[in-house]
Image 1: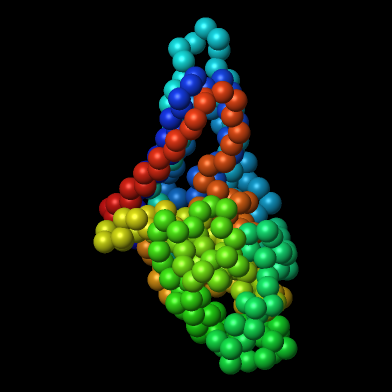
Image 2: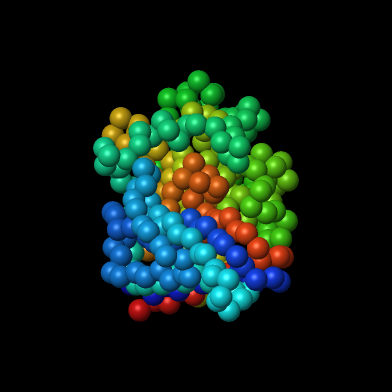
Length: 277
């Protein structure tokens, strides 16, 4: 499927901005799952791009406001372009990417927990000793993802970027980011490498999910084989999904992250539009 995407992040300040440093995960890379036809990234910052250790295309830049320049009270970052999704949810990472065991590492946001492990054991009907050997296949990963989506019902406005997986798991609600964090934490709790994926989702009937998140689960460590699964929709990723970046959790690959000096109070708005071509 050929898609056209425009992602605008706008910041408004109550006082003039003096200086800002940005890190952006807003440039998708081509791979087995998609081909990027062309892409652009616009910001007041002078941006420098690189491919990081996880294979993400990351940009860094800074904004320095001259004392003689007009006051800056708004800034925006605009990522846009076209790509072709290939509907691939099953592939093997090349050897230059980190070993899957990296994604067994606990993080503050997606920390493994014994209660999650016990819950997964009940859901899959297997003792933890058997589950630790790894997933038996795609069906088992999909069954666990479906159960997580039912456990953590989709509900906006109840969680935030600081919500950790165990909180969403206990509360039984959250958005796609929380569902992905819970899936990652549950998998790590039973010894399955899993990573967080940020991206886009195209569905004319679900514009609120245009900015989306899901998870990759490693089903064969020896061959570095991964399965990409959408917890919100209880399905493997397909032509509707566009990958932006992967990380151990959201905090390692947010679309926009930065520090600033000046600006007073800050407000942010995000607009993502996706069209099929």
